[in-house]
Length: 335
Ligand SMILES: O=C(O)CCC(=O)C(=O)O
Image 1 (tube, rainbow, N blue to C red):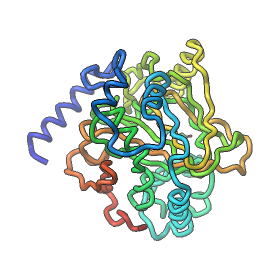
Image 2: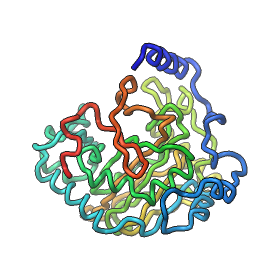
Image 3: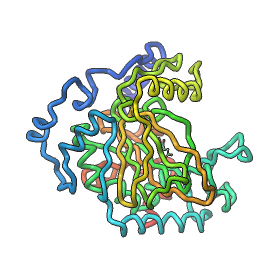
Image 4: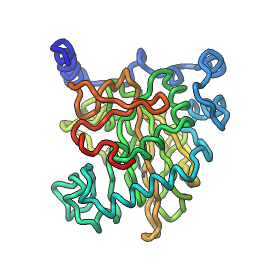
């Protein structure tokens, strides 16, 4: 990376520190988030590059109004089974892999995020486990996150090159408090963010399903005391954020919906949709899911952990997936 780029990056960091964002920048807002987007006109000019088994216009209207869209039965079961087989192999032989895992259990404090090898094997199969960026290891994971039905939708909402930001695999419900993603999963342009929640099995009501508030992508943004993005020096906490979101959505009478989708269905949600993980009422009930966060190449032209390095990228159906520069030995080891 040139000196000029480094200086520019440093200047951007200082700008964010001294002039914190108070809202999404209207100059870089995706076209569909602007006032009265012309969805039909857009689709005439930019027909999807991939054939999709759903009505793109309808899904874009859903997105614009509700902050999410459900793509029903778009992923073939054998693609999911292939991925889950890799995941089971990973949990069976964690000692053979390098991968970042977070387990939010008190016994692992103060270092709850570690290399997979450094957790007891049994803990990896339990609750509060987040397997990070398994797509770097598993080619089946790359294929799943880059399924044409997902890529076509993301290309439509952003109208530019889409890139992967990160992924998470869950065996059980996360039970996470209500949040929006953009304050945490931040690219250079915070509005260039969307997530796909790929159901790897039929989701049961007692598994702690994902919930979200319909239309919450349009509520006023929370101020962390450092602007709308969370930072280590923020004066307001994630729980205050959750409380603000729950209360604001309730005051605006936004419906709280529960995601009970089937294996092969995909929920795609907006950077600012308020969502969380419901309470697990049956501890035995799994909730197998693969959650992928995406951005645009404009907003994330590098791997999120190495902003000063030129990334190595792989092209899957027009989606760019960056190799993990921290663990090059793990890239595509499951093929
Ligand atoms: O699946 C879940 O329960 C939560 C996932 C989530 O909130 C996220 O990845 O942003």
